[in-house]
Length: 304
Image 1: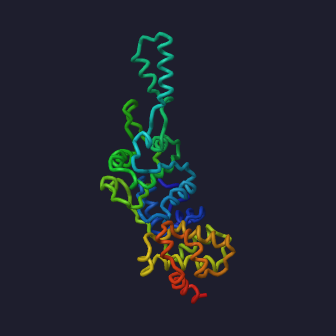
Image 2 (image 1 turned 90 degrees about the vertical axis):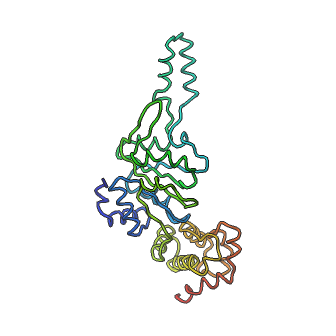
Image 3 (image 1 turned 135 degrees about the horizontal axis):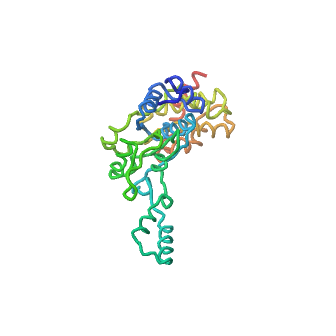
């Protein structure tokens, strides 16, 4: 169940804004239903649109600990769920041998006790005390398909199976957020166990609100120039010139850089000098020429 303070979608929107996250109503509805139905939420979208930041903001709003599982190619189950403290187990067995213990079966059972268990993110989330944790399974598309299959039990039933112990069920249902940059398609079995939301680049007003909230030192005029410029940069036909458009994170960092440079009015020279903040690819930095920057700045200059 949702907390009393989050008893409506509007209350959730307001609570998220209170911690600096500006969610539109569609996203807030998806989050609200994930909380209400106690279902994992899969967020897909381009890098930098606020998927990871949502989990961080939600943990603050719900006053729960945030547990993060960063996925990567080759991620193994033991790194996500648990592993045994082999060094401590070995010491225990040697100590038992030194005492002349003849019941080796008993010794073997002893080394698989809870105190020798090293908990990784999934197990930490399942065993977190009430009210539970927020588990962020970040960039799940970077892991391989066998790892997706391993996640199914957790996603579907909030439990995992440990051969030496048995089934571990959630003490308090974790709020679970999965993110994907869609570098590859996830298996349908994963998607069926989750609510789904595609997180797109924000509309101008929402991005402007984010920049103003995250960069309070920026003047109103500068924040407007940043939001207008980045918004046009993502639009056609300009977007075709670049491999990847800047995300919200880049907009905020660019605004901070402009404030640090004491920028009052953004011009093509400033854009060229700071292109490495907006883009992380050499080709994209080179593609942002002064001529293109001048074209992108024209609407903002006309509105000023």
